[in-house]
Image (cartoon, rainbow, N blue to C red):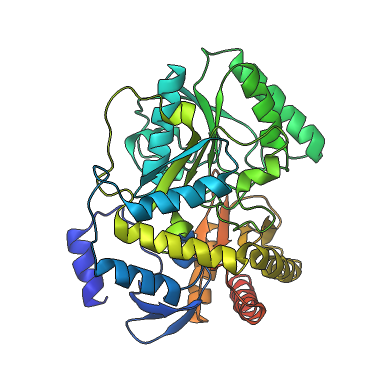
Length: 428
């Protein structure tokens, strides 16, 4: 056990999870690679939980942060803040939401908290619809609506939460239906739930469920949900903390795959926009954003340093068409991984889109989760010089692959080869 690990265990909570039997300290990075304190180099296919979106030590972001740090780090939202206004303008422009207003927070958890505050205030209801297998953060309110037992340590909540079907395509009572019948069954379930409760404030949903193992419904499900919600004045909150900024390749926002009935009422974001800087936020039309009748601030949300990072990072993302790169390179990577999976009875499914790919593992010949295999693959990948993530919900275990969006074809091939060896070693 390393000295740092011993110190960590003495002062950090027991529930603060660490990857690997022998946890590593990442000391620096460049591009799509990181190094640990022992000098080992890794290809990073997890990006600090989908947060290093463009690249490690991206010169444009480093320069912007350094120059801003030399002027002022912070002043709070009580003063005009040019970088905050400029980033809000750019985000409003790409949001797809008419008359958009933007509020910055420090994390995705806080962004979802704010979205719930807006929705429940606007609708004067504390009932919320959420998806089974979902994850929305670690605060009291977001834990209370999270539909993933592994990440929900209490049943206490300020909200009444009702869970509906649809976030997981290949498990559950509708798994054997074709896509159209699956959507119809989920819509019927939603209508049935609404018939048994007082009017909810909102439905909150991840277009691709992150912690749940990168699961998603057929395209169009949330559009059909939105039609049902609009009939009753219920809001749609799209949690884009992991799916935003072009990661899914086909669309800039994950909700783009469900856009037939128009944009969501509220979008939350975080992670990738800061490329490691602590930025989260909420986008909503003015009518919703302005519904609060009391004062509010965000001490650290929108601080000049993080806004400088966000502006430089978003500019790089757009100027270099990293969404297109995610679509092209991600498409190659997922097909390569599916070819590997076809050889292995323990791989139940390879799914995802863009550079957001899940590999679900099961005990061979069954649909039963295999968390031991997931841990073994994680360890073997690390030994081979590759960092990946893992997740899953009810009776599932999945590997999560989400590299920076600037990943090259050569790096995708390199990572796929390491993953192939790791999977083979786990099932040999």
